[in-house]
Figure 1 (cartoon, rainbow, N blue to C red):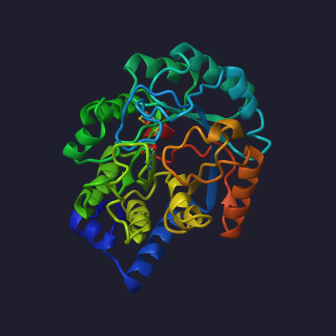
Figure 2 (tube, rainbow, N blue to C red):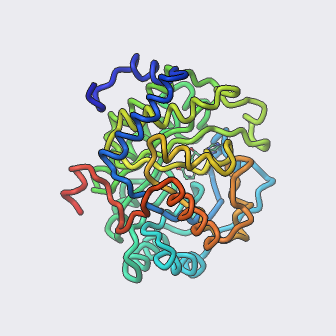
Amino acid sequence: MEEGAISKDTVIKLLKSEGDDLERLYARADGVRAEHMGDEVYVRGIIEFSNLCANDCLYCGIRASNVNVNRYSMGIDEIMQSVASFERMGQTTVVLQSGETPGLSDDDIGRLIRTIKSETSLAVTLSVGNRPRETYRFWRECGMDRYLIRFETTDRQLFARLHPDCSFDERIACLHILRQLGVQTGSGFMIGVPGETLEILADNILFCRELDLDMIGIGPYIPHPDTPLAEEPNAYTGNEEVFYKAVSALRIVNPDAHIPATTAFDAVFPGVGRNLALTRGANIFMPNNTPVEHRKDYLLYPGKPCVDENADQCVACVMMRIEAIGRKIGTGPGHSLKIHNKRIQ
Ligand code: SAM
Ligand code: FES
């Protein structure tokens, strides 16, 4: 069957695979990844530059109402100190992530993007939430290459329950605006938010195809003790294999999108989670480059790995992990392979 054209029923079947079928699913996803994306794993370093947030997403450890968080916002100089070692360490993209209120102003972020683009050959990805078109346009003019903003779930009721500050339509509008501006657009979802079913998970996977995304990040939902969902377990508790089945089905449905092995996989499967994701469909690794003194303050969920390690240690470890599974480190920016973006590069 042609990879892109899979129906919802088939996706649900893939998500229910067991035994030999499951091995076949993983092998097929790995084959699709190899055929469309090659053996290179691109290493995109993430800097969580601020945990200030005005929103109260019900699942998120740094939500505004969590008074136990020690709030911080890095300045441009401090961020540039982290960025300075990226190329030496073999990282070709910097991903700048924060909560959803300007720790840095829009102008400061624009200045930061310009500085990175003029002083390095790095691609710049931003992940700072819903913003107006004018802000996205300004950052694009400053040189922003990519943007990540997850739709989290396609179930509108569930979305509304989880996000008191933002509607599903607003979130999707952001994705469309970014695409119109020629920004490589990434989105995705959490796997197993309370109330999710395999039907919803299949819809989430298929919606990524509909959006024709350049990058798709998905990772297990992990309850955080200081949130209203603290007592609500992941929908697939006791059946965690679903997390990997989702990555494999996602790859089969979206053959030529960049798919990271996200950090939350290591929180659920310490030491092996991201490696397994890389052998079951993923092709991107995003090591944590946040300065060690801030890491424990950017805990979206408990069990986040590497909170006591510095960027050098994290990146060295990541490079070893990639080589250990017989893959190559990607060189160059690793831009989107999609045709609509080839035109604008
Ligand atoms: N503020 C930006 C935004 O919302 O796009 C970026 C930061 S936000 C914390 C990054 C992602 O973390 C969210 O899109 C969500 O999917 C994920 N996340 C937050 N809380 C989580 C949890 N408890 N378990 C797993 N992932 C979580
Ligand atoms: Fe703001 Fe999660 S609620 S970043």
